[in-house]
Structures are given as C-alpha cells and as structure tokens.
Length: 284
Image (tube, rainbow, N blue to C red; front, top):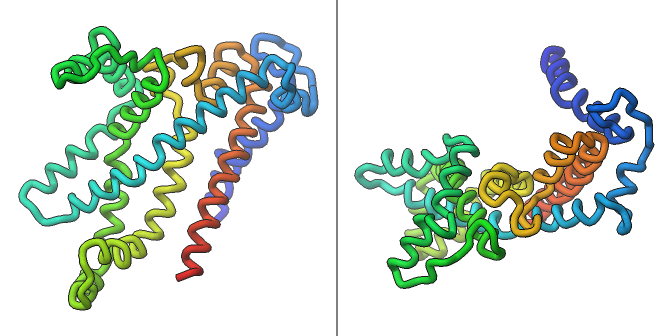
C-alpha cells in the first residue's frame, strides 16, 4: 500500500497542491518576484470589467459548445459500430483494426492532416462535396458553425475506435443466453437492444459517458492546429486559453486559477453523470 500512496502523493496530490499555491500568487516565470495575491486571480475571472473574465468565459462557452456537439456522437456512433463489429462475419478483425487505427495517431498528425483536408480553398473535403453537387466553398477552419462541425468531425473520426473497442468488450460480456431467452419470448431486435443490450452495457456506458465528457471538455490540440481559435477566438476552448495564458503570456497564476475553475465545473458534470446512472439503476 505504501508505494502506491507515495506515487499518489507524488504525481497527484503534490501537483494539485503546487497548482493551487501558484493560483494564489502573481506568478510570472520571467520575474523573480512572485507576490502573494490571495484570491485576486479568481476574482479577476468573475469581474465583468476585468481583462481576463470576458476571454475566460468566452472560452468556457466554446468548451461547452464543443462538448455538447461531440459527446452525443461519440456515445452513439461507437455503440452501433461496436454492435456491427460484434457480429460474426469474414474479416471482422480487419474491420476492428481499421476502426481503431486513427486513435493511435498523435494529435499533431491528426491536426495537420485535417487542416489540409478541411482547407476552404484546396481541401479535399470541399473538392468531394463539389463533385457531389453540394456547396464546395465552406470555410471549415475560419467560419462558424462550419468550424465547430469540422472540429467535431475530426474528433469523432480520431477517437471513434477507442469507444467502439470499450463498447465491444462490454457487449462480449453479455451472456448469449439472455438474447436467446428474449428471442424465445418473442422480443424483436429493438426490444432485445432496449431490454438486454442497454442494461448489460450500463457499467461500461457509465465509464464511456464520463470519460468522453471529460475528454471533450479538455479538447485542445484539434482547435490549436486546425482553427487556431478562429474566427475571433470563437473556437478557442478553455484548455486552449489556459495554455496560451500560462505558456505564451507566462501568467501562471491566472492560468492556474482558470484550471481550478474548469476542474470544478468538470467535477460537477461528473457528479451529475454518476447521479443519473445511479438513479436509473435504482429505478430498475
């Protein structure tokens, strides 16, 4: 137990404590003096007349928009993909590998690849849209809402395989006897899905929902590389702003305060997810 406790303190508790300490100071890594300012960094984020508050809450809004757009797709599409891959057909292992393959790519590779594909002038996405008789002048990286849907498309393509594999593992743990019993009782495909598949996936679904929600809210690389926050910082997420504040402007105290507020928001969202799943479990 002791080694695990040491690792937990070293890599979890200590960084959190140090980050909290930084958030209470005017911590500029370029300056030797780092005066204690108490909660001023936090107050600044709630001061409508301040410099940081408008930018921070715009970034939080952008984070919310991306999370609301991407999370449902990252929950539903992988589920049906996993159900297809769970069937018995020739070459299913190849299909599983193909679906999972994009996830092994780094965000830099994914971002650069899709920045080219989504380019409004020379991108292949617009080229093929035009070939289908659809609008071929969509500015996927500089105009909203196209920029949002572009980021969502990239994220779903990139991370679809991970959630599919997790769902697939859950599907394979559901006893085949349950499906056979439901079929004998006259249940159709939809009824088997509703009364056998979904309840059997409940533990897996809780993990997938929570991890997807947190991952979407922490999206950074795609926006940084593909849109750069354009247009007018509309796609600049909270993590994007935190990185910019701390690593470009060197205002580590303010960046740490932003991080803790974002963390509290995500903790609240996770608590809601756990509560909803627990209530539904109790209702059964």
